[in-house]
Image 1: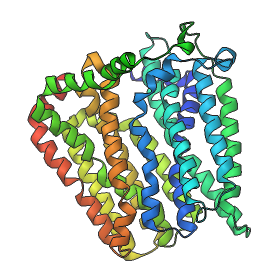
Image 2: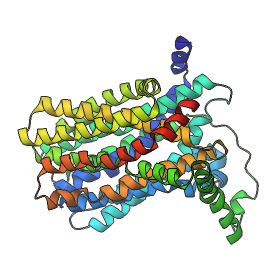
Image 3: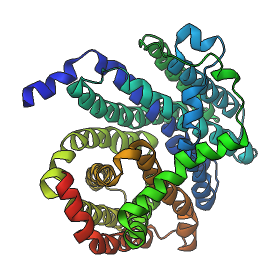
Amino acid sequence: MLASYFNGYLDRRMLRIFLLGMMSGFPWVLIGSALTLWLKEDGLSRTTVGFAGLIFGVYAFNFLWAPLIDRLSLPWLSRKIGHRKAWIILFQICIFASLLVWIQLDATEHLFWVVGFGLIIAFASASQDIVIDALRIEQAGQDERQVMAAGAAMSVIGWWSGFKLGGLVTFFIADYIQAMGVQNYWQYTFISVLLMIGLMNLGLLLIPEQQRLISANASKQQYSLAMLISWLGETVIDPLVSFFRNNGVRIGLAILGFVFLFKIGEAFMGKMSIVFYREIGFSKSEIGIYSKGLGWVVTIVFTLIGGWFAMRLGTVKALFIAGVAMASTNIMFSLLYWVGKVDWLFALAVMLDDLAAAFATVAFVTFISLLVDRRYTATQYALLASIGTGGKTILSASSGWMVDSLDGDWGIFFIITALMVIPSLLLLILLRREVGTRTKTQT
């Protein structure tokens, strides 16, 4: 059985799914890693860098316009290359065009426009994820369970490859151009990024797509207020009502509180991590090697085996261990700050942090998946995931302000981020009997 499972990875469709995953993860290099360093190296404050991260908030709401993208076809383009690929290409064009604008801008003089077009990239990225997931699922037939399972794992591997390896290449290019004495090295780096985006889109065109039956009037349909209310009810209200009916108000609110708070400390730390690495003396290439390259290996390996550990431990116990692990690795960065620029300690801290984050993600996704009502699987899962994303995005935007308020004392900052996991773990203890019994039963 184990051999037949791994045979699923040998299917040539895995390459297509890997590419789709990369296209989903790569924009995070632009609006996360690259934008953070660009703003920091152009002299903007940590507070400004932190609040610029609010653009990630659109990822928490992309489920609202998912039905629209699913039902509407694009004139001419959908007929030429397929419905899914047409939408992906449209959003890729938005990202491409935004980068062309970034190339013309100075971050200190045009901060509003830099963040504004960063928001466009985030919106396009969050929207294309809707279509990428659909195209990935449609690469396998409904009865091909092993291919579906392997495809889900390959999609995660592709996402982390796009984010980690894309960041590694981007940082190396920026460091090389800066070493040549070019003043606007980030702008020239984005030109290289345009080439990478172009190559991925050429690969996208080679991915086959199933023909879909879309209503002839779909693209001309007028959406009335009644239809909008009905759609909102099906997308948000009904799944929430079902969630509280199944769990009760007290348990339901505790679950939502846990989902909202669990990864807050990780988000605070992650938002400022690259700024911290630069301030203690690591170059962009060194950050790329340790944080992106080494982090990619650890994340991929533990993503593949993390599910097995979560299943063996039980979901609630796995979440508790993951929370403690995330807090512990944050404290390691306090140690790095107090000791100074030490390569081996940096590598160890990054490796353990990525290991803890990968395990926490697998356990967290498993937890949410086991709690959703099967009548509203997609919408309820999307809502719970969005609550978690919204919590991380909104609260962690103040991470730079916190460091500035501490007069740049990174050691205290990382200790505070470690303590942030405590409220969610207390909620988990309250939930362990109710939720623990249910997740064990479903597992």
